[in-house]
Length: 277
Image 1 (tube, rainbow, N blue to C red):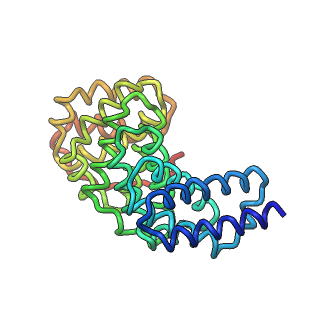
Image 2 (cartoon, helix red, strand yellow):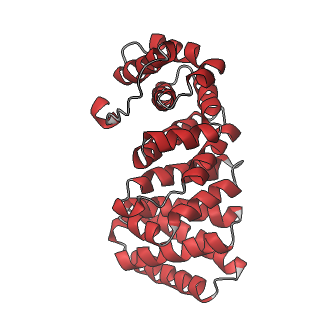
């Protein structure tokens, strides 16, 4: 009975939101209500029984609400709902409905809000693996610039730093090393990455993906910029502190080699990180 009540109530919320797309109160309460019902279904272990059509409709109206009213209350509940929907097979619906751009804009509009940024970055990570439909939908400059801005606004939040660096690496795999590295450097990524490594020197994940990012940068001729920003010492420190980590030894070692051997030819090696882990 509870499941039927929640399903009927959710359908009512979805219908109201669809009929009144420009009514802020309805959209705000709708997002809150749908998120509340979803939490109950999760706690009751009934979320998996939600019809796919209902889940898809919920995704569509929530994304429309986030686009129409990019306010904190709508965005926060909307992002939380989308995060759950991805776990239950709605990633491609989110992508087809323009969810990637909507999430990016939401993060950019609330770059100072750690909650929005954390959930938003994690959502983008999930959507990058959401299937072939996500390929090519990331605007390179806006995406990388937004993620780096998040890192700059929340330098002490290790979770945000970790997820941001991982997302940047996902984007590198989609774009290719050279194109990614050029945009990354132009958007101030070298300095942001080194700052993160310096502040979180004991964080394995940040050191790993920091070395991966720098390894890509040295291959496009920006060795001196890394060196001038103190990158040599930071990478060497990472290698010393995590001397048993294969990923840091490989990417950190390659980075140091390039930094001290400026005549090296460019190497477009894109070793799959999953094979290293």
